[in-house]
Picture 1 (cartoon, one colour):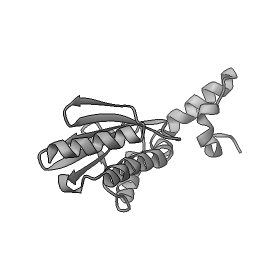
Picture 2: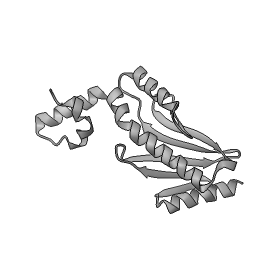
Picture 3: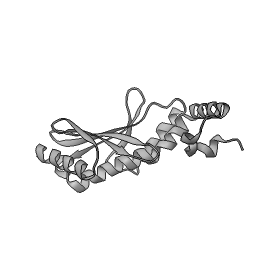
Picture 4: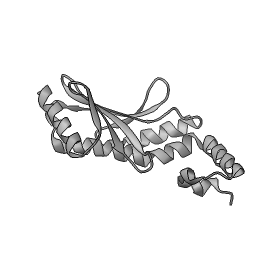
Length: 162
């Protein structure tokens, strides 16, 4: 069973033309390309009973922790296959476990899609809630020096003076 789950994961990663490494047999690391979060690293590890799915989303928020973590927990109610979690540093991850018998090409593709969708669609909100002061400071620094603010376009609505 363990080999077949690894074979299925390898097949899906290859068919989707994702760059991946297999660090040890059954342990995969891949980068999922996004739009807001340009790249989400995901690992899939085949265990004795289940496949563990793990992805880093964002570092510990600088501010407004309660609002960030509450927003993540509320999102968890609507998610499939993975859920937001925080580690002992407060960094934000997506984490899940899927039983080996459920590992099919369709299911692996669905899990990768869920990781990508949740990381990508949540990224700007996490930044707005947890890093607003830093983003505003960066914006003001760039404006004062005549630098491009293009990388901050997603936050224009609340950054620009009204």
